[in-house]
Amino acid sequence: MIENEKNFKTSDFYYHLPEELIAQTPIKERDHSRLLVLDKKTGAVEHKHFYDVIDYLNAGDCLVINETKVLPARLYGTRKDTGAVIELLLLKRIDDKCWETLVKPGKKAKEGTEIVFKENLLTGIITEVQEDGNRIIKFQYEGIFEEILDQLGEMPLPPYIHEKLEDKNRYQTIYAKNPGSAAAPTAGLHFNDELLKKVEEKGIKIARLTLHVGLGTFRPVKAEFISEHKMHSEYYELTQTEADKINSAKIGGFKVFSVGTTSTRTLETIGDENGLVRAQSGWTDIFIFPGYEYKVVDCLITNFHLPESTLVMLVSALAGKENIMNAYNEAVQEKYRFFSFGDAMLIK
Image 1 (tube, rainbow, N blue to C red):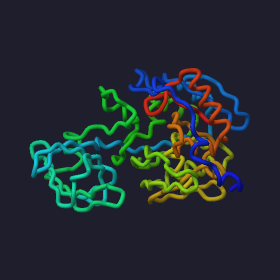
Image 2: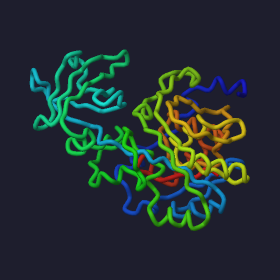
Image 3: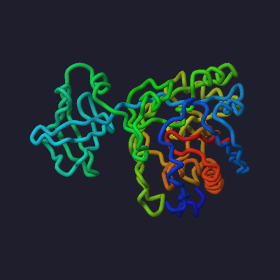
């Protein structure tokens, strides 16, 4: 790590974003969003549409996507003792019945509090209040938890989205398969079946991994110096078949295109100094910021991230802070749409 880069302040990653540029709804056609293409070596910017991304991928390259599926993790219930409404957000599964959750209002949600959900399909009891204020809840139900969740739960849209989502599938990628996320890996929302088919037809391998996105992804960085920030941990897995696809691209001198910061964090967690990955599963709390040397990821497809967030720091590590800040300011001038339902960026 370059010495002075240890001294980056959180405020170094601030940019001004007018509120009207925060996308509240997804656009009609997934691949018709805009695409800002940033050359990480020169800082040059091009303005395209997402379906043009195919022009930057070549036969032999590998596109890495995250197959996680967002759980309808927001639940509304009532306290058994008082009948007061209580809101729950499922964050992390601990075992079959127990989940780490965010509870609102939290003040009176003490250990032993019982919560009843619609028509008694589900009940829960708070078994532990953690230091950070999260609650461990043990659920009781009959049948399959995911099916009950589908009936009772709502999509946990990020706090900056105030519009109701008409079609909850629009907060899922078309290849979402493995339930477990509290938020969508939003860079993948731009792909449709037709575009993925074109990718494969061009001779580009598609490798699939899973990283379950935690709500820590929206947690602001409160430390003055970024090196003092403590990252949340998220569960990932990569199989041997998919690892082989990534490694064959690296060994062949082709590029690895990571779709999203979630795929990126997984690849960089399991990559070695030669840029090769191994099949494994586990938890990662990797924090990527300028000074970090990327091992696996060559190019990144991503959305525009919140000012001063760990994700702005991650993309700055790949393209350089100055290049990213210039590109973001240009995106603001050009009225790109920002965040989860917004436009995309390709760092090449």
